Image (cartoon, rainbow, N blue to C red; front, side, top):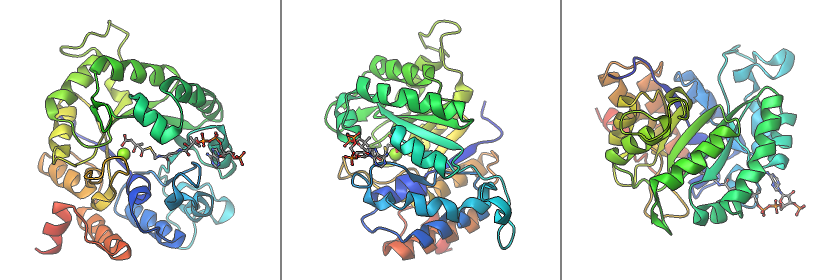
Length: 323
Ligand code: HMG
Ligand code: MG
């Protein structure tokens, strides 16, 4: 069966904008996140506390977070802000190391994500580390964040294919996934970073990790499906099919990017994440609730596309716009 409800983990402001050619002004980012919240999204990945030279598009993280304080209620007396939204929106941020954690905690961030790789090539390209070294870098970050009461998501990239290494063996992916989870991550997001996966692979990986149908994990040794999320990029048009396969295996947290923003610097042909609108269209049709107002969301993506000077690649946004 399928779940009744799905929580969308919106990544447009982070995974989307980090890959856009044009750097967006901080005030526009803040408006984008507010509009996403107004459209009903409850988990909105806001930015990254990474090295500003590695991702210049998100170098304004410390300026952005205070502009979002009204959404989480962390901004002190004025937190409700004009209009007093005062809703408990979750605003996770990416943090690779202790330096990033310090910067984030100083600003009152309550939820972070570390981001590991299933392959050595991407660990090197993205983190300047081996897989082992990057896990060692995350360990104190996860421990300190948990001790500070923050939730910690662990991303695992290149779960299905890697631009340098090709197909990635399932055992290799599962081994890194178990190490990230074992470190204390409260949620593990399985990334198809370059968008090459097909549904059978998704089912096989989930079964391997959870010990579900066909999996080899020992009883009790698996990762509970409640702690797994999926993160698909739509390069080969497989993201929705892959999502459906994951839902059929009990996954209820799905990553998506408003308007399908983004790309991937390591795979020239790669498009952005699964578009949130395309996801909501499918979930609405299946009677699965998300709390998202599709028309408001789509209008937000049209507005953002104008800011970026290129049309949204989302089929659903285009269809709704030209109704
Ligand atoms: P490094 O060059 O090895 O850094 O980069 P280092 O540890 O040697 O430090 C060098 C200098 O950087 C030091 O300054 C540090 O203080 C500074 P110095 O002492 O020389 O003056 N520094 C920092 N400054 C600000 N904030 C920080 C920070 N860290 C160090 N956090 C590092 C290593 C991890 C920092 C770098 O590789 C990096 O920032 N990488 C981030 C790459 C990134 O953001 N990629 C995109 C996100 S992952 C993704 O998109 C995939 C995902 O969507 C899932 C999927 O699709 O698969 C999540
Ligand atoms: Mg991604």
